[in-house]
Image: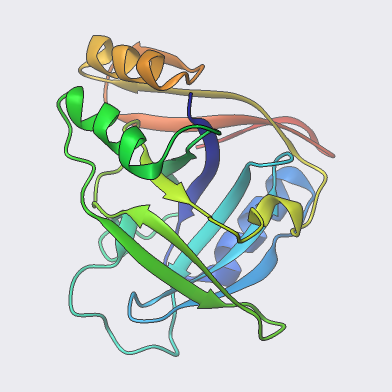
Length: 206
C-alpha cells in the first residue's frame, strides 16, 4: 500500500510560511531550493523517517511560469495546507498507485519528471503525477534513487494524524482505504489538516 510522503503548505512568501510553521511548532524549516520552470521554491521539515512538510511559495527570482503555479498559490495568500503526496511502497510503482486513484474516479494527471538544486549545489530529481487538485485526493511521487527529503531536513516534529472534510466523504474514504492510508475524514466543506507532535506540544496545521 502507498504511504504518506509529504504535505504541501502553500503560501506566497516563503519566509512568512517558514515563520508561521516555526511559531506553531518551535522548529524552523530548512531551505530546499527552487523548482525551475514552475516559479516556486520551498523549505522542508521532517515529520518522520519518510514523511515531511514542504512549505512552498512563489520564487521571486524566477520569471512567471507559463501556467498557474501549483496548489493555488497565485490565488490564495496562505499559508494553508493545500495538498499531500503519497509514495509507492515496495512492490508498487508510481503508475500502479496512480491507476488506483484513477479507478476511484479521479484523474491523477500525467507522470512527469522534476528536479531542483539544493542549497549545497546537489541536483536531485523525482517523478510525480501532475494535477492542480488540492485537498484530500493525493498526488503520487517517486523519489527513485534520491533519498527522501525527510532524512536530510530538520527534525523535532512527528506526524500524529491526517484529518479533513469533503462533501463527498464516502468516495474519499473509499479511495484512502484502497491506497492503505489511515485518515479521519468527515463530511463538510473541503479541508485538509495534520496533527503534529512538536516541541510546542501537539499542534494542528490547517
